[in-house]
Image 1 (cartoon, protein in one colour):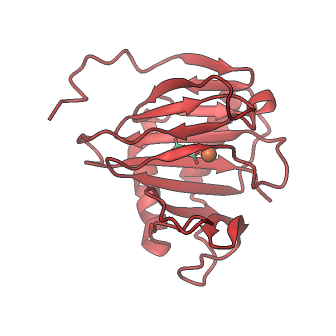
Image 2 (cartoon, rainbow, N blue to C red):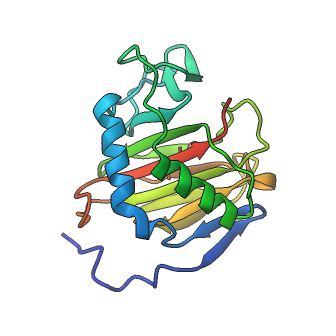
Length: 216
Ligand code: SIN
Ligand code: FE2
């Protein structure tokens, strides 16, 4: 197996502008990785990861759970935010302070000092899992940015434009990287290419992604 962590990666710091309103903060979450992983484990102990059904009846390859005031769900009725976890019948776990704090400081760093997320979708990818090109548009309004935190195995993030057929660029997202997009790029299309095989020192054969939004 190829070693993805051979020390040949570029240094994980700095800020890359992806588009108007969109920045990639390299390594921003690295100092907090263990606290974030512990918080995710605590959420998943209450509302476990599950592979949801798409409205067309396909099973998503990405396993998901949520924390916060509502959770993003998909089933035969469509996509929406639900205040209860349909699997447990209970409210989603509260958003751990470690997660909220990281999201707010990343948003501030990205130019959005007034961001206070009320929901956090947690995506879990195993090798082969992918997320097709989509827009995040199930939120009530689009005035607030999206903060997306990557942990574990690296992924290839596709970032396009407002139109589905706008040109798409790929950006490698590694453990600790954070992408913030809002303003003119809030509704830009994005996705994750099929995850490559690998083993991460902290998470093994897994990539985790936290997506913070103001949804309600
Ligand atoms: C998402 O679009 O909800 C997640 C993107 C990612 O996994 O980086
Ligand atoms: Fe998304």
